[in-house]
Length: 148
Ligand code: TYD
View (cartoon, helix red, strand yellow):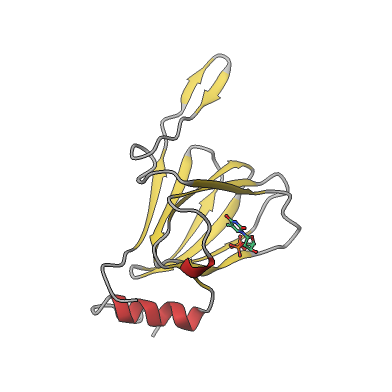
């Protein structure tokens, strides 16, 4: 798992084109989406109280956008922990590389679109939190455990 790994989380606010008919937001590769789009999937009809995620990726770059309703994405990266409420289609959460994510507090009407730079590959997942921490220590020599 050695190499030039990344562990990055960033909020992006989109340009909301509003006229008397309503709103329009456009997402474009390497413009407001900071990578080439290879895959799109969406979470919807989420059961009451369900929690998803609980994994990190090794290489994958993703952006999550709540196009309807709201949810919370709690992230852990080399930069520490943060909680992001996604409650507008005008906001995207970019997660790149080794970032642990937990998604919860789905509203009944939540539709969470996730845009990714690679096809689905189970090999890119880290599904164990201890292994996630190990990956941070291994790949970022200056990383110190902020939880201690
Ligand atoms: P998973 O990534 O574990 O979902 P979450 O992180 O939202 O809890 O994926 C759930 C299942 O769906 C798992 O069997 C893998 C499959 N899957 C695909 O086939 N393609 C995809 O693009 C994704 C994201 C998941």
